[in-house]
Image (cartoon, rainbow, N blue to C red; front, side, top):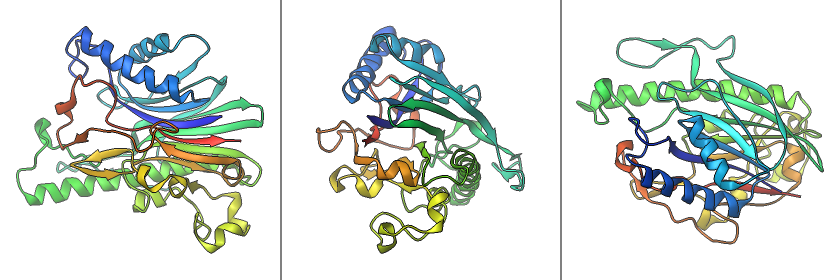
Length: 316
């Protein structure tokens, strides 16, 4: 079976301030998304940037019967939320945006505004598989694409750019910490025997400090000597499957011409040992063909498909 994550890029019905401007563009977007999901045929797919829940139902209608669906009830200010769909039946275990109890609120703008919750909720589900239950969480962390007061996407000066870059980093780090707390609940110290996946758009690359927060005890990453040897950290550790992805496919978005892997699949010890393959895009299709995006998210309004590639693992 395949477990995957995909940012669907501003999935809204037409007519609103963020979605396609007309029905033809909307239908083209849905058709492009449905074609990828049909070929990928995931048992479980974590999705991000669901703006209208009704639009996700429209997408499911194109996929046909036999799909399960759940979306978070904790969207951001634009209605963007995460969710799951798949061929497997699953139940929702958690839908939360709370920071851990000991983590203080973080500053998010020049006014001094502080927040103590994630911008978008995290969702966790449990799916029944032939190999036993799989617990999975999906998240969409704070973007690196900065926005400024009054809807600007360009700073007034370098000082403002640096400050808002720091605010975004504070928030993304706090959200990663909250997601790690949810992962701890799913693992429950049983990662050697429990199948757990953490998926989503983490908005930073493999070696970024915010991504590293999610991994847990260091020392046995894929490709290191410690990977082949069990240790006490395996019960609580998560592994990013990025090193298992062929090098020429190791990206999920192209930012200003630079390929980057910001969408991630992290697995528990037991589930990683069941993994036979990992990739981006579609299995067997080589490196994904993606548009290059810039700092203005409005530039792709109404474009078909998504500016992200799916990231997937095949589980035995």
